[in-house]
Length: 458
Image (cartoon, rainbow, N blue to C red):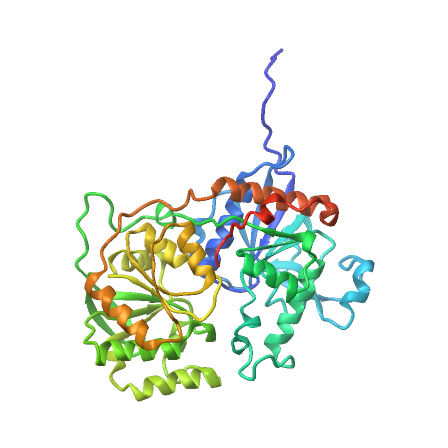
């Protein structure tokens, strides 16, 4: 009879679904992948976890290579729930949820059966927006809040400001209700954590501040160039403005990673670019990439905000000579262009930071960024060494772009994925414990809440 006693048993006897309610790509998917992979690898009280990434219907998971093999991806459908349906709504929460539409995960797609949803023991929501109601479940859930930008830039939700009759503001109200009922809410910066308390109404004893974390995404895919391979000298790319291909030389451009949202500061950015080309003699092409950046092409959107952007571009008749819109790029193309850019340009009014400056640093590309608290903190944590400018001053921005063209130097490529890994996993373990214990309010505040560290970036 064998005397062997296993020292570890891989139970996987609890299932956690990480829910991404919107078809995000890029930085936000990096967050999803980082959390899923860490949950797949950690052990809490002797148990390990089956991890499912729940995505919207018809979502094409083009970045699945970032996920561990043990993480599965499921398309999730939601159904409306009656306030008094005790299968999904805790009777103690009825009064607080009264008058709000409620939704719960109900089916896996495309077949429409319950599937793995019935096996889920806890949910981690990557925001509580886009559910078309307040997320409810008798299973414990936590909410990751990347930012609450609408508190500072209400124009991202409504051109009339904080118009609470507009659908986006209703969605905002749904998220704040879900935050109040969550077992735990975790945020990425101290400022966002304060916003969850003072704007969203989170219970202070149910909040956590995670340490900053990043992924070495190039390590998880086949790269075009490795050690000993010749550097690429030029690219032939498709410009979505003209619908024509163009050629750009290595180091003959800078990369502006953005999207079409109002906090991305497009009017001031295009004024800066015009000054850079027309007054300062700038020679570098500006390549714009990122999710829905095709919406920056005049005529694509009808909102008052984008009308201002299009007016700026129509007054600058030659802008397409130097400014090219590439749209959303695969990670393979993005990383290759990032590596060969003269520098990365990040220009926003206010945000939660961006993975792109960390990714630029990892491939040795200098960074020029607008200055705001979260990005300065990220810069310090990852030792990026960014050059900063005032987002509201196009002349200063243009001058800094010209200086980066003439003087910026390549930096050594380096690994960034190991920064704060131990703290990130420890925080995730605590998050899981809080969800399953169900008594987060009675716990003493975590020391990490006081530590002044920041978290996953989105």
